[in-house]
Image (tube, rainbow, N blue to C red):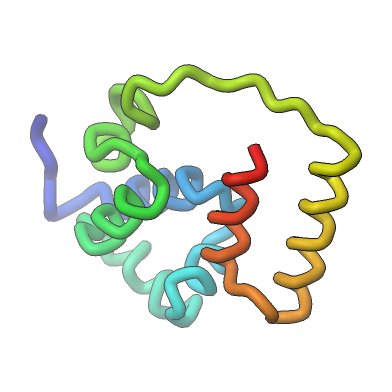
Amino acid sequence: MKIDFEKGGAAVIDRVIKAYGFKTKLELSNHLGTSASNLSLRYKRDFFPSDLVIRCMAETGATLEWLANGQGEFLPNEKPKEVVLTDETLEKLERLANLKEKGAITDQEFNELKAKLF
């Protein structure tokens, strides 16, 4: 696998956002505890964000090949699982969302707990 450390960083950041399940760069910057302008600057410079890739791999399980190049499997040897939403699961998810909204849990804690529900 070849990684170009001088360019392609913006596309890598887009894949990091997708790996976390975020919809915006702002969500990622909040998760990372950095300012949106800092992330925007990294996006514009387009350098390979190795620190973000390593953290994302550790926190989401995404593969290096997919994060770095957009090739291969997003998650190693994992088949998509069927999600069954019960009333109980929906209630738990709603409570988690309320805790996140009130600032009682971080974005990372929310995502980790949400992943455990499914």
